[in-house]
Amino acid sequence: MTTIADFTATLPNGETLDLAQKRGKVLLVVNTASKCGFTPQYKGLEELYRRYGDKGFEVIAFPCNQFGSQEPGSEEDIASFCEVNFGVTFPLMKKVDVNGDNASPLFDWMKAEAPGLMGSRAIKWNFTKFLIDRDGKAVKRFAPQDTPERIAADIETLL
Image 1 (spheres, rainbow, N blue to C red):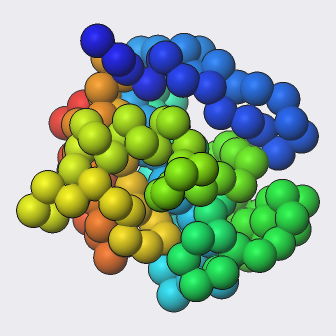
Image 2: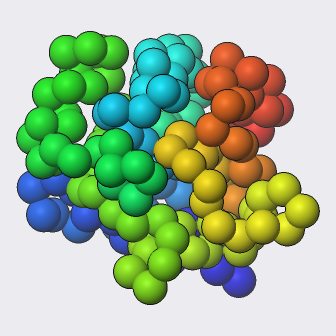
């Protein structure tokens, strides 16, 4: 059986993060963008990270420029923007594609495990969120309009 522990992610500095290191944690994996109407969700994501971090919860953000070119900056620009404007301390990964031929294998797996509305696999927009349980399984997908505050209860049930 495949779990998130079977994947890696690339950090902004080019180093590889083995997601097996996250085994035993509840994760919220999000495709993000700095110039999107949903960008203020960074604040709520940071609040979740701080509220539940000591209980084994983490947020992992993957900037993506596939939707309206709303993440055009470099990794350094993105990190600076998130820190200055929203106080983000959770990990930001290197920019990825979440759909198409060059999609991140991690996102392909999450889309298959937790399909969207009516079984859709494609990610429709920035700030689609995937909840991963302590066993590394993708258990739920949240739409961009699902605010971090609205999904806190789902996180709590897994902690």
